[in-house]
Image (cartoon, rainbow, N blue to C red; front, top):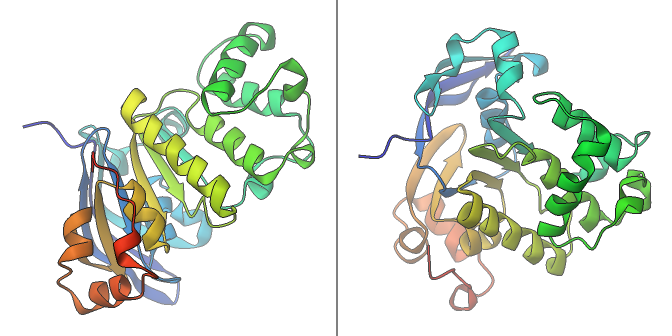
Length: 267
């Protein structure tokens, strides 16, 4: 049996707010796209921060186990976790304009992300950066790398953020509500990029969203999170066609036109 890429068994609390995540158990296979769906406040982003061991920065505490390719992350020092963040786990957040540094040029930000884990001068890395951006459907040249985030469209900025997140080809990518600020056409293009990353690079993607429609068009499996607990996990087609939990049935019934869903045949 293939070893799980990610294996989680955790609980998480905030000061004065216990039980934000309660005995949450979840596994992901290498290259799998797993959708995590839940309403605001259900604990989705808390899970992402717990995987990255960053919840303490928000005043929270995580207990339990987080294993990446068999390695227990909860036992690592902060220095060891810094080596993992960005190299083995990539992160794409909701707002690219907030996530990118407005004062730094795109090329500078990509080079800093590269130098965090590998050596290489800006000149040596530039061809690599351009190739990666082009693979994400951006028509770019060296002048593009000299732009600052304010000179980009939201769609361009989101692709840059994805490029930075996958610069070191991490086996796991956390995508936290990263399409919610995009128009429908750009959202479709970004979902196709995630599908491409899974198929061509073997990247496992935890796609966190409240948008069941987007999740259903991309993900191999769906996990439904409610009030800090997983209430249902299963293949996408089963969740959509035969939901078991009342909350899942409510989510599915709220989809605009269920029969119009475009579900990738490979899912």
